[in-house]
Amino acid sequence: MADIHVTRDLLWAVARGTVPASVVTQIGVQHLMSLCPTCRRELLAFQKERTATAAAEYDRVFRLLPALLDEEVPRLEREQHVAERDLADLLALARAERALKVQRARKRFRSAGLVRLLVAESRKQIHRDPGEALHFAELARSLAHRNPRMTGYFGLLVLTTSEMANACRLSDDIGQAEKHFSHARFVISRYGVTDTEILARVDSLEGSLRMDQRLFKEAEDLLSRSAMLYRIGGHRIEAARVLVTLGGLCFFQGDLTRAIEVTGRALEGFVRDVEPRLYLCARYNLARYLTEDGQYTEASDLLAVDEQLYREFPEAWTQLRLVWLRGKIALGQGQTEAAEQAFLAARDGFLLEGNGYDAAMVSIEDLALLYLREGRTEDVKRLAEEIVPYFRGAGRPPRGRGRPHALSRSRAPGATDRPSRARVREISPRSPDRSLSSFWTGGDIVVREPVMDNSVP
Figure 1 (cartoon, helix red, strand yellow):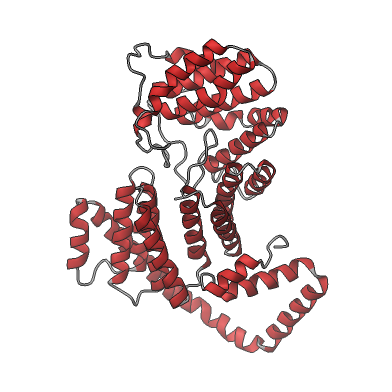
Figure 2 (cartoon, helix red, strand yellow):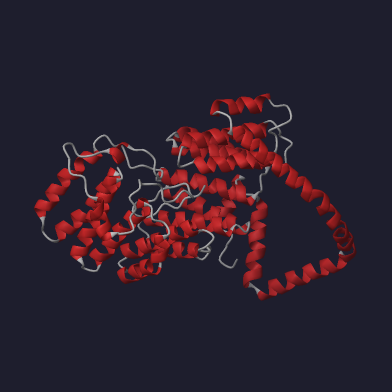
């Protein structure tokens, strides 16, 4: 914990009531234990003396503990079984019938376990169908309201309200998202919610909203605090997930050095075999940042090391971005012909998948630059004529992975020649023939392509 500090932002958060004061105490003690031998020695000595003084009391507690566990564990298992059964019954109903079922029930559908299961369902749906995600989050909150005596009631109220806010964000209802986050913050402050995992989740989701609003300083503060809270709570993977998002934010702001450093720290929190998708996301982003920073050899080496990992995710979404990045590296290394082939393959592949926005981005960001460097002005003009139709009627790029957008279905009027799949496979033989599917469903934000989305459900 030597790298976790008591910061002004954290102290202001405590002053505003958005973070409990106990968090500061915990950070301070852990920081001292990590850095100062004297403080560590004295604190450990105190704990030892305190333990010795209370040894008799502890001995009595430990004698009672097995009996307590024998009683509590079966009860908790029964409650979880009931919650899973209740969830299955609700999922079997039509959407409109679920809320009525909960409202009419007198004894069922009242457990904290069911609330958490419904939150999990909401997260599963968040990028596939934000409306369905909102439905499950609303159902979870209404269930919590029916039993204010349930364990952790106020924390669950904050959690469900924040999940509702996130679903509203991804449905472009920013005003409602703001209202939900405001209410969640009020409950945290008024009722002293101290669960660090819930506080970290709220910060992460609200940080995503601030990124969407281009309020980068607020987003950075929230995401940094979220990662810190996750680490304090021992949630290493969730902390790393947030750091990947924070790395994307640094990239947005043009701070490549910090983007590389933060993403490197995130990778320290992953176990490849436990979270392979998230691990690949972070590795790809790191290679992207290295490329943008002019470290082409390092980026190329990173892709070579991860070649087998990319084979495990043959979705077109993944493979086309890999082709795109290889083209950027080739261009940086002066391999113009290879770069052009990769860019054309990526663009054509995106068009095959109905993703006009990314196809246009390849043309604007890379092909146009390549043609300008070579003085191929006629090719630049032709490229401009080809991509303009993709932007007509499009307000902005899609915010969520795989979300419908006018641009993603656009085609140039009169364009009859569809790029062949064989042409895409010339550059990326592992690209599949099946339709485009979202690569990453683990998060809550989208970072500028071709950086891979990392955000969390």
